[in-house]
Amino acid sequence: MRWIIDLIVRHRNICSLLLTVALSVAMIIAQPSTQASIVRYLSMTIFYPAYAVVSQVSSFTGVYSENKRLRQELAELSTQIQVLRDQSAENMRLRGLVGFSEHTLYTLTPVRVVARDPSYFYKSVLVSGGASQGVGMYMPIVGEHGAVGKVSQVMGNMSMIQLLRDPSSRASVMVNRSRAVGILQTDNARDFFVRLRSHEDAQAGDTIVTSGLGGIYPKGLTVGVVEKIDDKSNLLFKRAYIDFSVDFDKLEELFVMRLPPQWAAQRAELDSVKMEK
Amino acid sequence: MTNTALKWAGWFLLCVVLQSTLVPQLAVMSVKPDLLLIALFYFSVKMGMMPGAFVGFFLGLGQDLFSPELLGQNALAKSLTGFALGLFNERVVRLDPIMRGALLVAAFILNDTAIMLVHLIKAGGGGGAGTIITEIFVVTLPRALYSLVFAAIPFVWINVVKPPRLVD
Image (cartoon, rainbow over the protein chains, first blue to last red):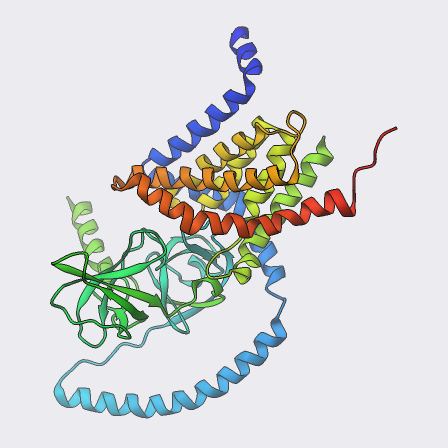
């Protein structure tokens, strides 16, 4: 036993590297459920309390200018709301005439970004709203300019938001003008595109919105604008590269749409069937 | 010993906080400096391989917590980078400012290459070497060069503003 300790002490540099590499590799190849439990444990105990305290302090800076800006926005939005109320009433009357069901208004819970992902490649943020405020897994997050992401982890008073810009995020979107549907993808975590069939209609300047097909994002949330079309590299498909409407580097106040995923009901039913068996 | 550890812990905490709060405001064409890697650079060059590997591991792990499905990638990359930087421990190797700059750029390349390699292996995608080289030129080098500006601040502070007193 002693010779092992001597060997480790003598080669402590290499041993430290092997240990850290082994731990890292173990985490990389672990099952997703194990990874999630490791993250949850470390998040709750070590990292986020420090983040939250410091971000609360830093959030006080710029309160005056933010207040001024918000007052101006409030004045603008109040007038817009009045116009939209009239249009909404008209819309409801017309929907009733053609037999469509009424739109459900979503309940929004405001949350504040308390920490951003410090890494370059992967994108997520931590917000100040969790299970206590009614935030649930997979609820969509929106900002003032459109869709931002979805809730990927919920804690008591905080939640992790997986941004649309995260390479592992997949959202079903469509071209607002032509209603051509595709999945938001990326090859390099920097340039995002929607893969469309080559005959489908899309052109630069078209607005991209959520399609409502993925079960998480409701239909019609603005995602971005088509920047350019690449139809040279593939005969069957073309790529509509998009410019996000949300500036992901400057997220501050966001809203959680209190909308459980559409497949939650089916899943609950399946779970109940399993329980009965 | 305890004082040194606390001092470094304070610096790392400050870097994490600044990286999450202030640095996004300093982005130039989406290129942001990486204060964590700069801090790891100074720490590893000062302290050596073993502390570099461990501190790199924990810094990377902190970053990984933001992407649960990618857990371990930054921890692996930063522990490798911390260890490699520790090879140039200033007690063993004398580094002039140009060497330090080159070493920091190399650290960025090593860090990002390790992350991309793991990502490619996990994704099982093709085009490995080409993708990595492109990413290094398009993403890593601009980031490393921008970070050099920020890395120069502590260097100037230590060597010009508050130079170490010579012992008779």
